[in-house]
Length: 84
Image (cartoon, rainbow, N blue to C red; front, top):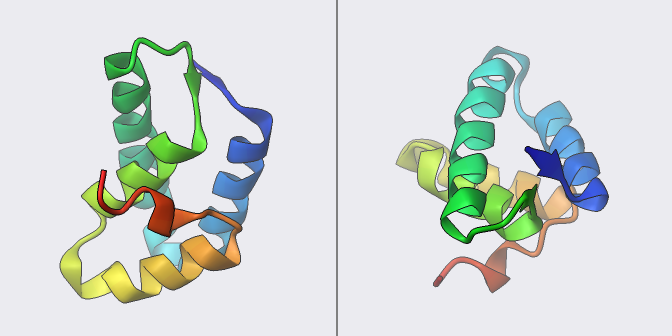
């Protein structure tokens, strides 16, 4: 599936912020979730909302605060998608 260019860059930045030992798992889980969300929307491209919702869905509760901080540092407007 294609990615919106800016979203893909933000995702790469986000992954670089995540501790090394969690990166591969986060990349795999969030990418898969984001792709499924895009497909559910009938879209052919992964967008920011898909990635943010993927992180919100796939991050264990104990890491949520760190994840939200990292999303913000990576340039994601996560507050826009929290309640959707």
